[in-house]
Every structure is written in C-alpha cells, then in structure tokens.
Image (cartoon, rainbow, N blue to C red):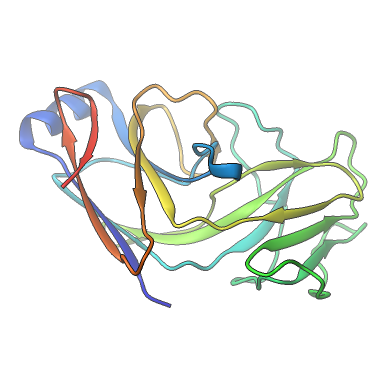
Length: 207
C-alpha cells in the first residue's frame, strides 16, 4: 500500500504570526457522509516546510469519552493494527475486541458493541502517521456514538482537511473549528499533494 504525503508550506511572515498567536497546524479526515472532520487526527507546531505521511491502514477503537468539543478520545480498547475490512469485530462484555467474525460490508470497518456502558460508547478509526519525520501513531481519526448491541460500520477516507487552530491536541474532538478548512483529496492514484498557507485568507491553498 503506497504512502500518501501531504506537504504544507508556510512563508516566513505567516509562520511568525502563527507562532505568535499560538496556532497549530491541524489535520483531520473526512467525517461520515462526506461531512468535515469531528476529530483532530494530528495537531503539531508549524515549520516552514511540513510533511505528513501515512498509509491507508486503520484500527478500530472503543472509548467511554463523549463526543464533546475538546475531549481527548481515550482509547480503552483497540483491535489489532491493521484491522481488516469486510469483518465484524465484537467488543465483548468484558471490554476487549474479540476475533473478527466475517459478515461485514466490503470496504468498511465494522464493530459490534456488546459492552453495556450507560449511554453507550464512542467508536471510531485510528491511524498511524509521521509528521516531519516523527511518528504520531494510533491517533483517532473519527468518532461515532454507538449504543449497546449496535453494529457500527466505519468508512475510511482518503480526503484530509488541514487548518490552523489554537489549543487543540491530536486525537481530540473538534466540533468547533475556528479557521477555514482546506480539503485535499487523494483519489485517482494521487499519492502526494502540496498546500501553501495564504496569510491574506487565513487558510491553506493548493499549490
């Protein structure tokens, strides 16, 4: 499976202002049904030339964290990495993921919530990445509320969103975004893309 690469370049004047304002670069994945992300997959200090690389492999996690802005998604149980599509991973009553059972939809990561937690659980996908050469592994990329005895099917996405924001950490819920997001699609064999931060508009533009 090929590496996907997102390059994010920031000019000297813009970089100085971002640093002074305490703004981080944030990368998220497209949410359910084509919606913008509700999780900050990666958040990092900006440099002039930033490189994010990853492979399209995922694990499934379960968490008791509610989907509220700023909440850190504590992954209490995860499937082996990488998980397989077309399988159903049961989260057992004991709180761990059992072996895949088949019966899942092709191309989707599927889990069954058999853990009876009041209010249900949060399920989602997690993914490894490297940011400027440093590993940032296992951060959540999505979050979906999942009641007891419910099957949840999670769709992977090769569309990433990039923006700048204060006071956000990797693997946290972002239901309130304070800056324009730029969508970058990795489809049709595209494995690399470059964006440049535009100081006048306050967002990244395709190069």
